Length: 420
Image (cartoon, rainbow, N blue to C red; front, side):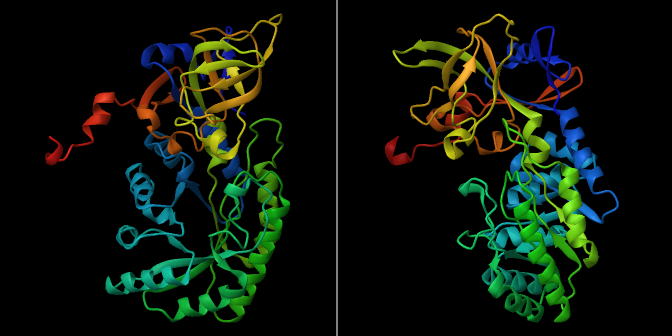
């Protein structure tokens, strides 16, 4: 459920008509709904009632400070994958003791920042990383709380570019090596082994891969404890999918029941890292039609948003439902169109066969389910300013990231003196 609905024939975010925002700040722009963020977080949290679970929102999905503060006020922790995301989480008010640092390529500077911040846990993904972290922690006279991320060699049946739990993926430590790595970790100064971590991919719409991976992790915990390791935490990652179109992903309650069945005998603290599930359907990308170009075989609706604003369709061949902001009439005849942006790439297409009622220059369209991996992946390709982000709360809205001017973009660059 989300809170983008038609009111008096006009799409609104909660109680704010989308055209009002467009008239105020121009297009394109991202719009997020506070009520949807609160609802999605609440449903997920309630699903784990009775389990010792810490919810660490995956910041990479949407790292806007206003979104993070909204979730922080609800009690969320954070899963970060860079020093910049750690800084964002802390600045938004998420306590360090509820922050997990994941990722395969943590730099020494990022590790020091996280150690000094006294975060909850490092999810370590290689022996090389483990040894560097040991040296840094020992030098600083402290201990780094560590969960080693195991690669379970499980095919998550998602898009190959967002699958992370197969043997050939760069993530985690192979099951055949993981026990030796725990032995190494226990011998290193500055390391405090506290748990096991796993994450097999994003946008999963079937529980079966989760069950396979979690069962393997549960077995690993038993083996590690028999060998004397104090395993107190299970970081099970995120990855539960959302409906972009006709997908029918499992409910959070079904996901939570599966985890309860597999992990209850272990009596571990659970760390869960939902991202897309919380923010995906809490955001839309609003764009305006520039031209309608009739071809001999196809009709192109050219809009002012582009692949640099929302990369998922070009990168993953992802589909997003696209709706007119003005609700069409029952009798309006729909036609198949291709909705494209102005960037000079053939991949700059949001929909290749979209059924739309008649649209014309100046009409507004909403690209739905754009709250996750939208603004965070945007760029200034073609010297197109990053689009603004707006947060709605009831009948109010605020610009939570402004659109930069072309002058401010150019001002970040300089010409060396030999070219002056």
